[in-house]
Image (cartoon, rainbow, N blue to C red; front, side):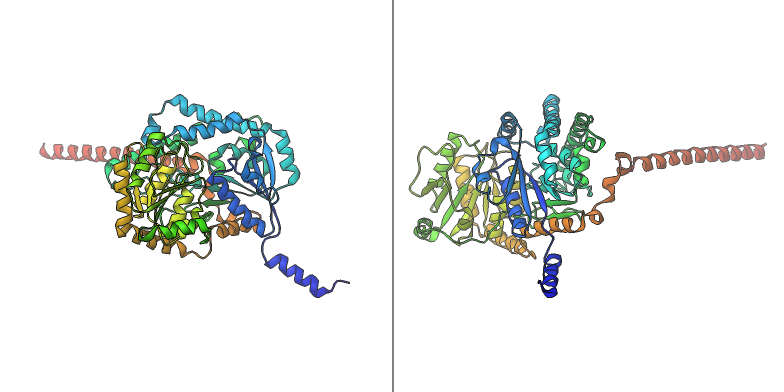
Amino acid sequence: MVSLHFLFFVFILNNIGGARPAKILMVFDKPGTSHYNDAVDIALQLYDRGHNITFLVPRVHQDDITVKEHLDTFSFIFTHFQKEDVDFFQASDKTITKWESLEMFMMPYRVILFVAEMYSNLTVDLLTDTRMSDEIATTQFDFVLFEGSFVWYHSLMRTLKIPYGVLTTSADISTSNIWFNAPSDCVTLPNILLEVVTVDLTSFAWRTRNCVGAAVGYMFYHVLVESHVASGTAEYSEEVRVGPITSFGQADVWLANVDFSTDITRPYLPATCLVGGLSIEDTNTLDQEYQRIINESGEHGILVVTMGTVVQAVSQEKTDKMAAAFARLPQTVVWKETSPRPTITANNIIIKPWIPQKALFANPKTRAVLFHGGNNGAFEALYCGLPIIAVPIYADQFDVSYRISSSGMGLTLDHNQMTDESLYQTITEVINNPRYRERAQHLSAVYRHNPSPAKERAAFWIEYVLRHGGNKLRKARISQMGFIEKNMIDVYLTLAFLLVVFLYFMKKIIVGLLRTLFKVVTETKM
């Protein structure tokens, strides 16, 4: 017979040790990318705490190596997204070489409309995937976490009617604060892809440019995307008809992959948790080959070069220019293989299809890192106190590069204008000028002064929502308001009306007094 003491002990473990095992759905449909890897880092943390994790990914990725390596750990539900849809997202990423806000403003309306319609079509595809819906309904998930940029998944959140969270996998922008229902100020919060390194944030030109960019982003998401998705899903139910921007604000928790050590200071709501650096790990182990490379580099050390996992936009000409610049350096260059490979490589250049990036970053003989501006790489360099040379290629890489460069950790080069001479001079400046390393080490100390690692903080807040059945006390009430109430339009119109009435009667009174005064003066003179 089981003793009462044993049962009491089990009860204590279940109720004090953490949240009870839950079924969690992770919606990240680009396996192999840094965004997907961030979700995996959180999922592994939750799995270690006893939760059951399921990933929702397109069927075209079911044979991906990043999916196969976790088949024993996670469950998977595959959607019927066509390969053309997935290829469009990847191709559109590579097409955008520098998507700044003013350039976005000048894009043809039909292109923007096409993207909005695509979001709507993908939403309808999800709602009509009955096989996927039945599998999700049968599992009865307790919580859903999905990537913020995948707006077509918001309809799925509405149909499940369970607590959900959003993970933003790149630096936040002024429009993000509107999504969070947090205060948004164009004076201090840069919009996406606006350079903040060499400009005066208080200048009239920058504030005007930032305001225009924020307005374009607001119109795109709130007018086009919101209306298209809402109209495309209207036939299903009133819950689904709510657009994605409304769903953003109603999320139970926002996990933002940013940190105050490098980001612009901004107001956040209580439901927002900063989890910048999800990919960071303490690892210093190098195999014999890389340890030999480190030892043979001598007093000059090494330069680590990595251009990410999905970047294919580096041309042969640019690759050769990079190799020519590296050949002039006294450092040994450890270069993660790029496509295409450089035509000629010097003796100090070592190209590998894979490199132990985190361990190389942590090695004291690493002098700097040259990378594409990926958010994960930026945080790994920050954690190790490494100065950076950023060469962004597309999408939010510009945004990440500008922000971390503006913090004083390094310099950013324009990929389109880069020459072998400019690259050589930039690398030499960052490595030889001690202020970049000193600044990087200072910010590293600031970042490390967190009570717990980013992935543990993310898991904590997800379990917080699970334990309390939501996060109502931390949600902003503004998320429950309509457009008129949220923007105080009715209040402003009422005040304007009262002001007009007040001015009207004041005019009447003043005119009446003047007439009376004129009449009295006239009668006195007579």
